[in-house]
Length: 191
Image: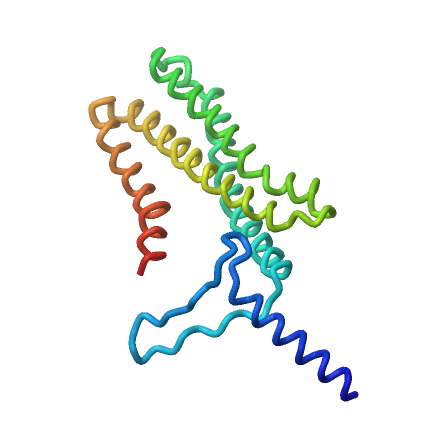
């Protein structure tokens, strides 16, 4: 009993020591409170493998949500080609349609790649590497999704309101996506 308790304490101390280290950057993480009265957050009691498991699980869940939106956009774009109004599109609008459709296909492929990576590599003990690659692919996928969605907005606004209105409307929607998806997380990280 005593030996088990002492082994448990050693494991807990080792875990606490490891949790203060950032395995990707190989540096010690110092948690400093923002406010003088605020206490520093205690480190999570997890091993690097547990952290990689948690990060991958969270990332895959986020990608599931985003992938649904990509699939809905893709279905919408596929359906457009079979409407009665599609033959009336001019060459520029058809080009915009094709580019947007292909961007959506590439977006779907990029956002599904982390699942394929996990399936192919998780038995090999490469989970931290899978998490790093998957996080980069998720960022690339979000950029592609932003372009796809704004391509669809541009196409629809061009058909409905004309190109003169489509350009500023698409510029505004692009700015909104950029602000919410890329600038807000960056500023929140610094705060």
